[in-house]
Length: 256
Image (cartoon, rainbow, N blue to C red; front, side, top):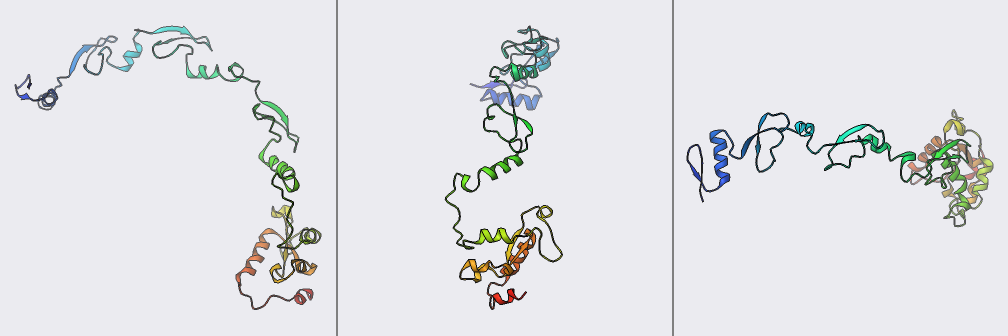
């Protein structure tokens, strides 16, 4: 079946070919119709296969009263119009819909936040009711303090009896606490833990690795209190020479 152009009489094997020919050669489309807008009365062209051709624009469609209903908002009581085919007509806006389903008006309202007292600083804070039984602190910093007290040492769920002190010997923890000073002993530093922002360290001037028995390294003149910054510096100087000519002698430290 052939399709003839109404303007020039040329024939084409398909309707689509004829329509394309007419649009490009004669400047008009054969698949559009002209109709009057049902809202504003203006004439407009539309594709008969893709539209019902009732309104010329979306604004005219929205302004038209066809299928539109009027009701009052369930939340604020204001009058508004809606299309039953596209929405239930309960709220005049998304804001009213959200407000009507939050807080005390929500169907699953359980009473709101719970007031609690922080077990660390005693400050009052609010916690979600769903997690109020587990919340004991007001902030992450207080939680960290609580965990350091309750989840360390024997109180930790993975506690397996503690270190046996193989690397630094069995006496290291006790000796360290006895010799640890209040300030960094590096000349010109003298930082306290508060000024450093970190705990002070006890440093071995002769490294523990030079002793057959680690406990022999913990004599008083071999230990010095350092801030974290200078302790890293001292350890770095030690590790630069991976093959020292000889380790420092115990007598050399005792002579200081």
